[in-house]
Length: 72
Image 1 (tube, one colour):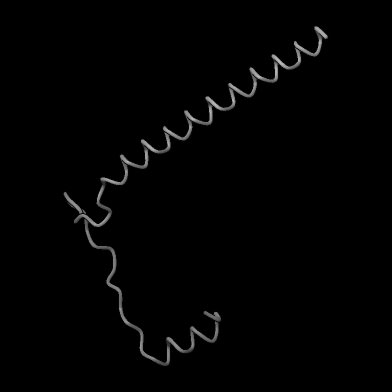
Image 2 (cartoon, one colour):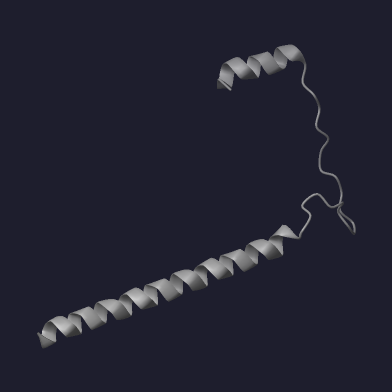
């Protein structure tokens, strides 16, 4: 009987630790999400940043060729 109580107590300790760690993880991830949500990804670069490339619109035949080749 004493052994069964010890096992139950140990299982409850592990369960409580698991729940507390899960809640801590959830709130840390939630706080990180809120922090990064405020950042605007599409801000103009500042300083000496240079635009790397310009997107060119390929002609229709080239797009069709890519479509058939890649199966997109």
